[in-house]
Image 1 (tube, rainbow, N blue to C red):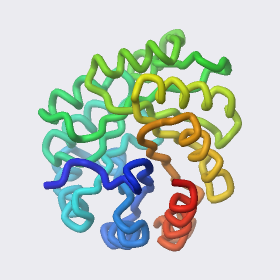
Image 2 (cartoon, rainbow, N blue to C red):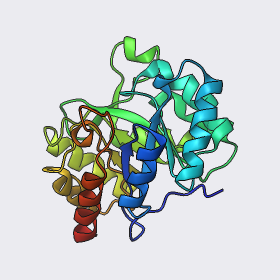
Image 3 (cartoon, helix red, strand yellow):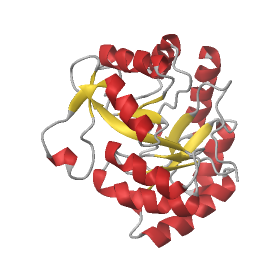
Length: 245
């Protein structure tokens, strides 16, 4: 079972949501395999049904599965860890405080485990209180370097920077990208990314020297009627990626 994502030129791998197993298969083909296909734990009533379904997804897309929370919902943290232990996906989405649990339950270091940190309005400072209880408490704001060190301590692979609101926090995002580059940590920009701002968002991270980038492109490329991600848009994102890398 392949546990490492298929990065284009070892730098960029897309992350998009699938509305069904057939949709996942079409996305994977459109991205020529340079994609992690998100399936949300929040869509399942329990761990067993999620595991059974996600295993079917994984079979169709060479295990390029990304186990999702669902809009960064901290209450899904424990469920994501439990599912990931059974499924052994290539990618796990976690709130900051859930990273250590996911890594321990995976029992290996190859799967990418991100940790969710949020913008604060101040470049170089990030909010790490994104867990089930901590998100309800006073904001824990730390230097991005400290957040990266904490994530490394817990076995994390990358910062999931969410919610970005596209390029609304450009200077903050640049500071995060530069810190990731300095400390050889991967970066996953998330929130408000679309076909218009995708290239600039990825370019900022590439220019900063981030070794591996996993941009999440969600609602902007989902067909509102079918609820499925449009493969043609994924193909376009791959073309943009090839132009950048």
